[in-house]
View (cartoon, helix red, strand yellow):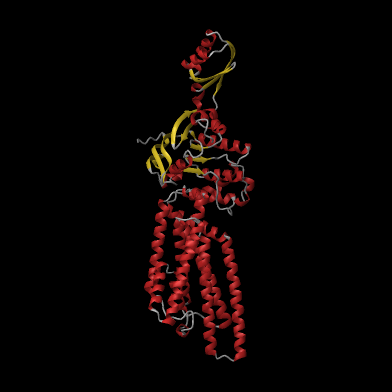
Length: 308
Length: 276
């Protein structure tokens, strides 16, 4: 595998087996630098194990992984990596300010720099009034926010966020979303694992769908309207032949009474599809293209029977 | 630097544990009971006109019992405070936020070990110093080689600490605690069987004791510490539990030191390669 400096993460055939259980079958993905990358998949797909391999917490059984140009787990590169684990836990007797100072020092930030930076990051996650409160008195949402601050305190180039909005109220989610965008604006790459597809949809640039330990699909979310258009049609006189004829411009067509839905390949084909229906004799009352939601896309890719 | 930061935070973490508070309370209660017992015994000497020589021997024996209690408290406190530092943090995921920092895994483990070692050293120093001070203040008795004795007890605690760390890289908190306390129990039993051989002159008991000490040399280190601290006369009394009937050699103490280093190396090796 050629290492490219354009990518924050590159993996090829990354694999992890525990005894007879295959946790990650063959993970191959690339994450461009400076992007927000969503890592999606149902429970048990191997997302957490994959993140742990990229972070060096779990040793791969096979394959290759490069993080910021170095083999995954390289201790020197970790100075440039931030990580918010799912369900962030730490010593409960520490105060919020002490926690940030400790993690800053462990990440190699000088004490003199931390004097200014700790208040700044407490402010960033809206915990300044709680700077001297011990973690044992924090709510789940507050723990999540201080966990996010510890992942950012050393201003890393690559940030792994595992369910960052878990346990947060809508205001907290918006705060996290803004922080993620600001980090990207700073030039950082964000690797986001989240079950909240609506959050992923409005935050991420790219997503990869993981199933049974393999990336089965990936999408550039900014380009999504051009290649995944769901069209809702209300018309009289629709026949199965007219519906099957739409296959030239799209897929997944279904007819229920006067309601027809299908997925068009792009916006360019929409006039032709409409002309086809009218020419075939349908009385079209409504022809409404809609952007397919990430949730619908997820369900389609994973299959209807797989829950999140 | 990373090691030192981990050592500092671990020292603070250990000091915050309730078990340390309990051990400190138990230690204070022990010192109080020891002082009261010593005081009553000295008063009773007056009632029975005990000769000064016998008084001194009895008070010295009481001091040894006190120091033995300190030894037991220190070892148990060491095991119970450190039993979940690796196993518990791995299970809860706390270790993830540390192990993804620019620190080698050996730095994390050694840093934690140093933090606990500092806490154990402070506990042994305070408890040993307190017991000796009470013995001297009330009874005018001192152990023969208190510093050598205290250092040997510290070695015993560090050995227990290292074995706890080693098994903590493999097993859950509960399993780890059961294994380490069982090993210490085995050593304890072996040591007393060897001591009994002084009365029964059984070569097989001596062998059994030596084998137990080779499996876990903690009790052997205490018996050497006791030998170093007690007066020659008290040691020669065959009825005393601290009688020097079967004294572990310095070779056995060196074995204890090597055992510690090997256990620490295994702990580092396994922690380095295991998945977190």
